Image 1 (cartoon, rainbow, N blue to C red):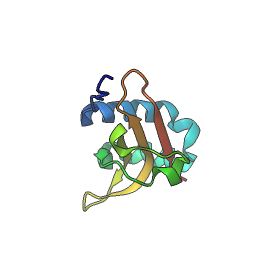
Image 2 (image 1 turned 135 degrees about the vertical axis):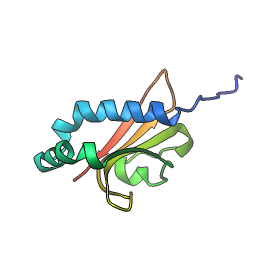
Image 3 (image 1 turned 30 degrees about the horizontal axis):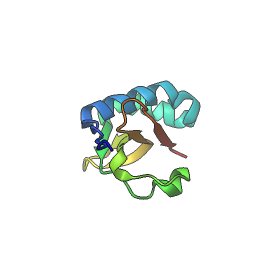
Image 4 (image 1 turned 45 degrees about the horizontal axis):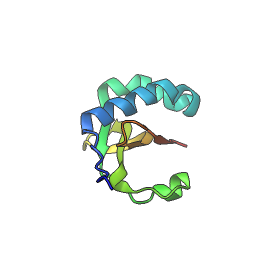
Amino acid sequence: MADHQVTKLDPDTAIDIAYDIFLEMAGENLEPADIVLFNLEFEQRGAVEFVETAEDWEQEIGVLVDPNEYAEVWIGLVNEQDEMDTIFAKFLISHQESDREYHVVWAK
């Protein structure tokens, strides 16, 4: 039996994938006020961050997720303390290149 070794996404690649998906889908998934806020503030305060994959995605998407199989990226705005205080979307992106599955939790 072959050892199933997944090459993990590097943070920059995960960030690029998440940001591309975000730009493509934000118009359909965010409130108009959030889109205006993103457009006005992202250049100054915007952040796309690679974060440690959370254990609670099952509650968010209803599917049990192995944190080792996915990268997690957040897109939002940071405050003066450089903390992300507005989150527009959280992405879960599979490390499987051949089957690049992803899940998004949009701001409500």
